[in-house]
Image 1: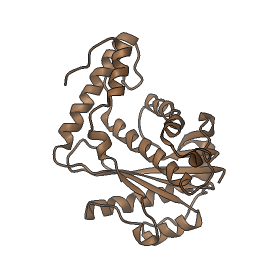
Image 2: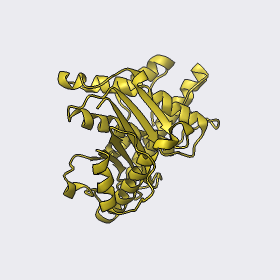
Image 3: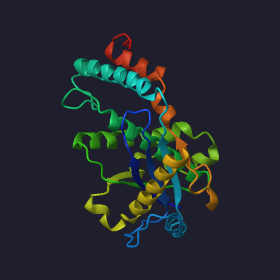
Image 4: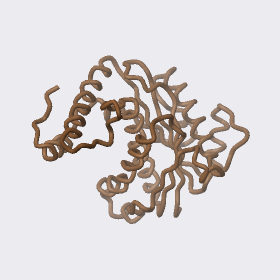
Length: 261
């Protein structure tokens, strides 16, 4: 496998709430997937397309609990204050909008995708496939052009995160860590209009997974078809306090003490 194509979609509600589920689905294929005309929202259709396209699936989901909202917003408020101080000193902060605020829905959306990208690439190299290049196609998100540029900037740092995370030497030989080996497209980009079929598969996986998550409080949709370790509850990444390295870097850049929230 010299190149992989990763397609991403989402389902659910990105609301700061103790009860609302949200998830993103990623599917990776060694071949570009052209348009599909017979899309059907049932698991048999999904498994057929997964098999025919040699797909590796991955799901990242947010499953809030009582108290999640308050815990997350406390962390987010601190992040926003730190961003504003940074902007006052440096005259710029890429995550602050024109209203001098950060968008927490965008933050949750992108946090899920970051974990998903890294996790699905790990799953592929664990199969001893060599990955020389990665094309990622994400379902078009209605947001500002500035946020989309920020996503591309952050995405460019994923190869370094992978490099820092992969410990096994045999695995490190299986992936190209050069940023130039990775490309990111939105689904409405005409450059990739002929190979958007994978988004339909990701959409069906997202729809069925969310339905099961709401009914059963877990995701096991592919368990009976030989898949395992294909989903992750990312709630724990969103409600934990900011790590010390992030705070230390901010203090170094601004010369200010840590905000107390």
